[in-house]
Image 1 (cartoon, rainbow, N blue to C red):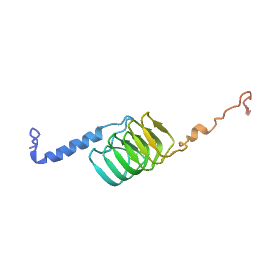
Image 2: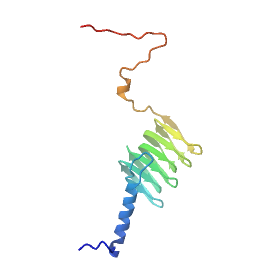
Image 3: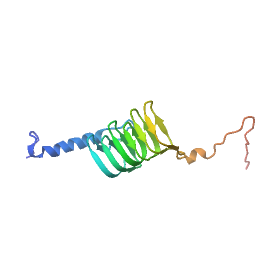
Image 4: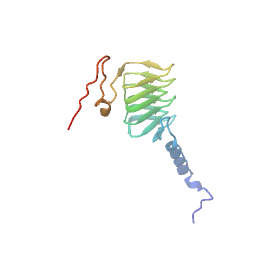
Length: 164
């Protein structure tokens, strides 16, 4: 009934695509996130990319990238776009304005040309950064702020006792 012993030669192209999709889905980032999509070497993309999750780019993108997720830019990637993401880890080339809501990690041999806006930036030695940088305030945890106050040196804390 099912011929599992022999691969069907007429559907080998479909099997190759499934294998590539499975391998791309099973890759994990250094942050433990699964890669949801992959723009490989030799791929030229023009337009707007909008996604959730994690995407790795090793090809060329010209246009715009929008996500709240993670953008991984490989060493051979060339991006000419307005980039808005949650977290960006870059080893390639990005030309254009970049906004990261969480953080940006620039790793050698990254080349960034344009305006960058992020609350947290880390940059390895050897990265080329040509542009402007605006550090934004990270989102604050409301619970941490409530009830915590520094007491100036030499001052006694005020203690109120409630009696019933």
